Length: 191
Image 1 (cartoon, rainbow, N blue to C red):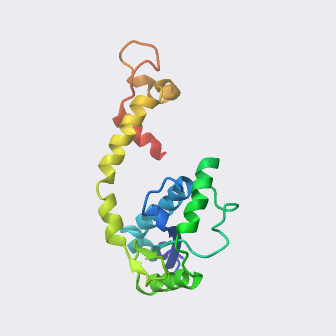
Image 2: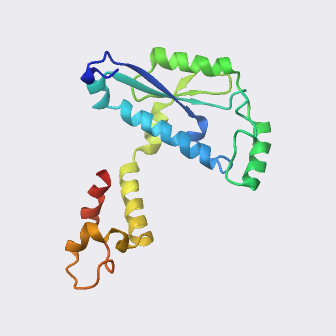
Image 3: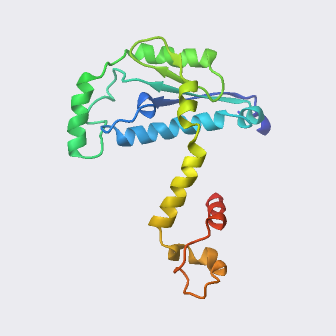
């Protein structure tokens, strides 16, 4: 499919969820998974990927849709208490018709630009929500770096990574007894 690999380009539409756009304590696993789908789709749909590959990538977020998926047997939360709470919420969700979800996919296919996000919910006309998604993730790189730095320095023992940075230990102490040099460590994640 990729033009840079001899293909003709094309379109990939990934299905996310309204749960990727709004945090809810009753759907932590679903929200996390669909957030990953949304962000992955947006990122690989951006430049320079689109120009290089010719593959337009679009994310469509469905609201609750009247299918057999919306049952406690197929859609679990985090634990028994969360599942019970989720079942109560299912009763209060507006369940759009499957035809409305399909209309959202078709409109996104016809009108969507690569890296865009569309919402198909509540039997309403599909709506592009890319601007809202970008607005709420604008400061993420700095936030992500600070979060990882704090997590790394406070949660992980350097001893797990001794073989990667023993040569940086100029303190004379035993390996693993010092904080890792983050400028050295972070690029290793890309290997």
